[in-house]
Length: 96
Length: 96
DNA sequence: TATCTAATTAGAATAAAAACTAATTAATGT
DNA sequence: ACATTAATTAGTTTTTATTCTAATTAGATA
Image (tube, rainbow over the protein chains, first blue to last red):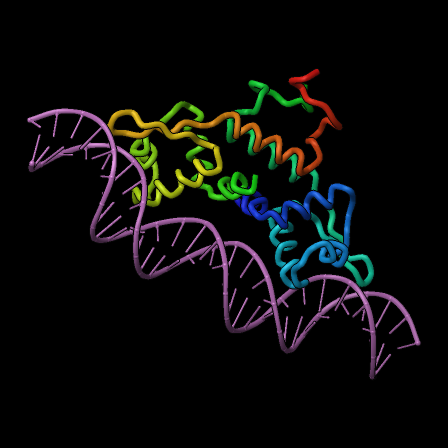
């Protein structure tokens, strides 16, 4: 989970995650939204990928990144656990 | 919120937060749990304080740190917002 | 095959975070 | 006033993150 928190520490990476909520995007689409060179963007995408927060898939000549919602929910759960389970004392909404 | 995510990026700081769930602790008590020098610990505590995650209060010769649960919940909310509100499509359990 | 677009990897430079030692402040007790 | 305990600030070094340019890989297409 350390990689996840480190990945979330960068505002640009958080913005990428936020963008991917709307659906998968290619590296180029993502790069177009930021004022950095492409290799820098690739580096950020690798951090997100290594943390398991996104998944990459090649589509012909381009590569699509999509949000890994499972990992995202795990991150939320980990943060809640860190602070003491949020507002519910215990339990899981998905496992009643 | 950037300061908050940066503060959470460090494992030692997350452990401090976790420890503080059980109640306030002095700087010395916290330092005793880690294998780092005191000034390093102070630096970590400052990061947490500047992010609003902990609050410091002097008690005589020592200083007590306590978890700021409000800021902690804000962090969870921010992370859920980033990923698209967790598993509920919308809505707030505390405001039915 | 040559070429074009999309994206990555390699390698170097810069910036930021984290650690340490030494010196200082703050409150208390003698 | 002086010493003691608790913790911080100052300044430096080391480590890790971030960014860039240049070169390379992968697939598509003429």
